[in-house]
Length: 412
Image (cartoon, rainbow, N blue to C red; front, side, top):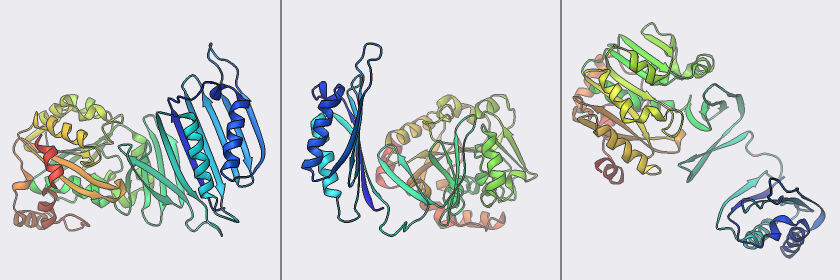
């Protein structure tokens, strides 16, 4: 049924302590503000928890309303409170009443910090949009989401939470630890941008290493270059590779089983520490720096990558959102400049990530921004790279034309 759902998580509340520990006092407050907001009380239930380790117990309570409910829980040892107000809007719009009740309760607890959520629920005559709406945040500030009709998988691997969802818009979509990784419909934005600027700028890449990239999308783009004789993919989580083989053929298109490809389940740090091979290209197709992939964004790991590059080779990685994660992008650019003579940041809007995304090519010899468009076009034709949705010779130059705010980050 159509309605409004409000939640608030209150921190460091400066209210009278009795409001946190006495059920009768809290109940009177909630009843008063509920009635003052114009909502209809039909029943209630309150419970005070016993003391624990010398700390007073909190209170849990609920008011049942003709319009729906109010739920409260207090944590006196933390001076914290959670509030939950839901009203249906069946015979009239009760949204203002719910907002008034929430406002009064927040003011009564006097928090110094809080998090609030405002969710419109349901439709009058059934769901207008069927399925599950799945949200993600960028740097804890911007939130975006997509609706999925089916949830194919949801399980914990040895390293991360793996989800596979499906929608008419995105097709099959992979999430790891609550973050969107790739989808069938728009994977080309990220994978083409990750692979082709450096691969095409390189005069003759023959060997390549991908660290991460278990979905196989970057590998598939890389193998479009006829000159690639050997491509090694090293991913820590074998379950990601297994799921990709079974469910994400439209992304890897069989590249995971291409005779030129070697697919290993291994820690990328350990692999680079032991390998004696040298690569024309190393692509870091990783989860973000604040995930278990964090050690692969460090100066020590970049040094190992540099050591594993053949003469004229290049390292490619994504850095996050220049707008939402400026300090992360600035720090990574600085770290790369401490290791390589040429660092060329670039960017592309990635629909699945909800924002403009930063990447970089780092090398002691290769500068992809210095390669003319005519040369890029000629190499794509000579190598038979024609099955592209995003990248072309004119886009190549545009990728490296940075907005001023991003450019300033890369120069610090």
